[in-house]
Image 1: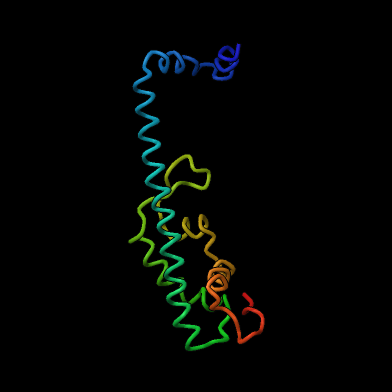
Image 2 (image 1 turned 180 degrees about the vertical axis):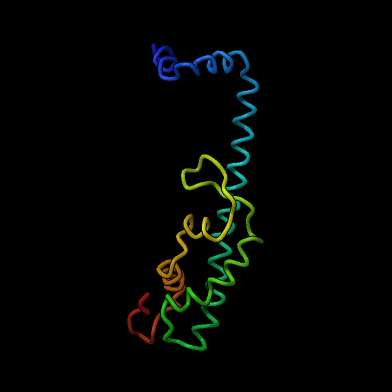
Amino acid sequence: MLLGLVRAMLGPLAPILDWAEAHPNAVALCFAIWGAIWGVGKIQLNRTEKETRALVLELGRNLLAKKPGMSARALYEAVYPDWARSVRKWALFIPHRLELWPVLANPENLKERIGFTPEWVKGVLEDEGLNRRRGKRPAEA
């Protein structure tokens, strides 16, 4: 009954199910290739997030040592050019936000996927205790 419903939903594309049933090895190979591409993309996304965090911490320490009251937005704007140049070294492609297909790992796509914003920078620095103003509240974004 369920198969009949799926065939009805597919309409003229229903013969695809017949082909898939006749060629299970080809279907498995397609899913294996897709899974491998997805896995490599996910690894690159995780590495990029880790490297971004390290870059923000390194540059944040240096910038906050020179100018302790620097805001999160100013830190973000100072870090962004170096981050955008480094992105190309860290990843070639990442999974789309729906995680069904790969997309090019450019600064715009990565910025959206990892949420690289002034608030994110502020959170990373606060996690390390770097964005505190001598006992006062953290610098505002």
